[in-house]
Image (cartoon, rainbow, N blue to C red; front, side, top):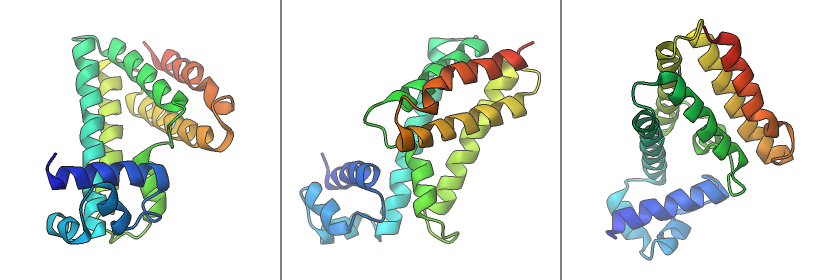
Length: 185
């Protein structure tokens, strides 16, 4: 693997497991089997590396939407059900530390941080995808349902971190399905 990819892979792992602020560039370089000079040759700063980490996460999330569409071609309601099941896997994953993008938002409150606009774009794009899917599935109030599902997922991911999978998050699918059923035509 080329140095840039090794650095990014190491950063992705460390940032997610330990937190962005807790991980220094030395630890990233060491985990990538390189040195700080090589890291800075590929990324102008740790902040730029964080922004690229978040862009990579967004690319991974976009591939989930593509997969749902491929698994349920021409069936937006099937895609919506698929989204609910995919989200449930995230909520119940025993190795999950929640949504990495939401975690970054909490760790990086500074509006001028290079990663901040990436965070906002990712969350806005995720919401827009969900709104569009609800619209295609002929949901009565697609924006309302998308917002409800979006907040339910974000909350379930946080609850899993705070109280475990057997806390309120264990009702994620049932609550999500009830919201979908209430809005279905």
